[in-house]
Image 1 (cartoon, rainbow, N blue to C red):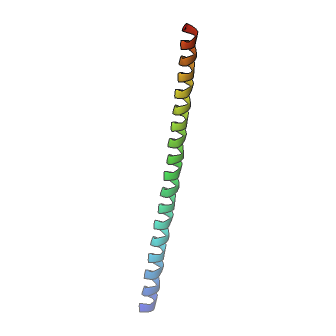
Image 2 (image 1 turned 120 degrees about the vertical axis):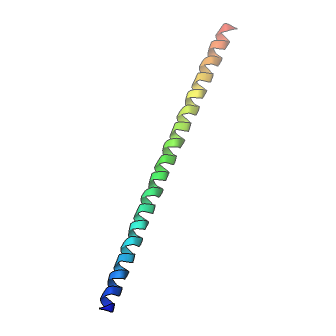
Image 3 (image 1 turned 90 degrees about the horizontal axis):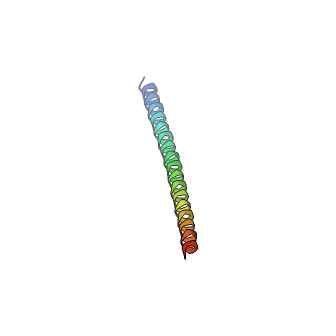
Length: 64
């Protein structure tokens, strides 16, 4: 029965490795999604800042 036990152990180890690989891949994908969302938030904030500055500059030019 040693051969059968070795085969079971090998199958179990392979399953655990596949499970870890899947979890790592899911985590990497999640990290990339979070990074893309953060970059989008930064771009939106920069665009809002630039629009506000342009509006304020225009109002200032009207006062002159």
